[in-house]
Image (tube, rainbow, N blue to C red; front, side):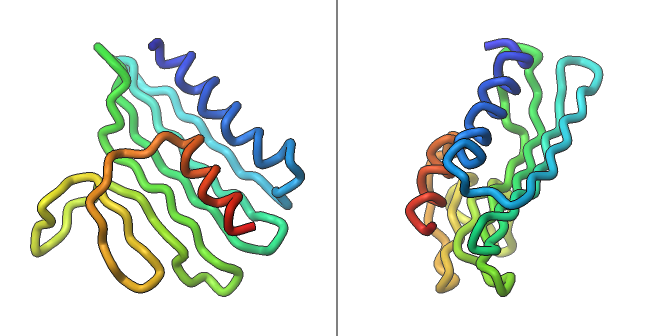
Length: 125
């Protein structure tokens, strides 16, 4: 998949939240870099005043590789509902991609597609 196609697919997934009337405000930044790299940052305020933060650093030289990512969903008080990321931890986790839950549990998981994260958010709304 080409980087441009990935970015279009990504934005289409976000549009679902808008199309269903779940968004109050959307801040979206897409930065194209040299050597087929991109950075995506978004902040989406939802109708219940919860907030969805997105950050991806993508290297698409050979294939779409999410070098780093974070999908964080917070309630109206700024408390974590869930976060998917691949950040390093100390002490080290036994997996790279993982999910943080509201109760502080960290679960090993596969890197989610943005459309699946949006589906999970919709269940909370």
